[in-house]
Image (cartoon, rainbow, N blue to C red; front, top):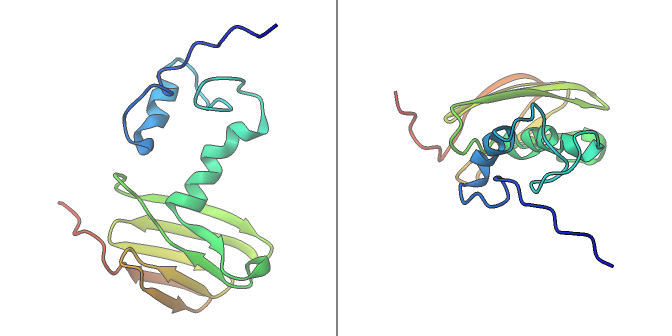
Length: 140
């Protein structure tokens, strides 16, 4: 015997780009993310995936070496005008504040920045403010 199919949520049939789908998930009346785009529980650990994804994919914070001995920042904001966050690492807290044309980083370890044009620049530990090569000019 098979279980009846669950009705799909608006997010799963949504043809908008993925960076606009979180609004569709929240428009269903919830105040948190569900475990998957098709619905499900609010109480599973993988419901936190959007929070992790913002740090890893939007701000682009990942280890460049094991244990975050050196880290990489590769912000990809899409349609966002900016994003900021902090990532706990074994070496300490890494703070990133990204705009379409610049990223500010506070890090206890050296940092490499992967720019939108594919170039890679290296920066010492501490505070850095980096103009992003290959970024689209900011409208203003």
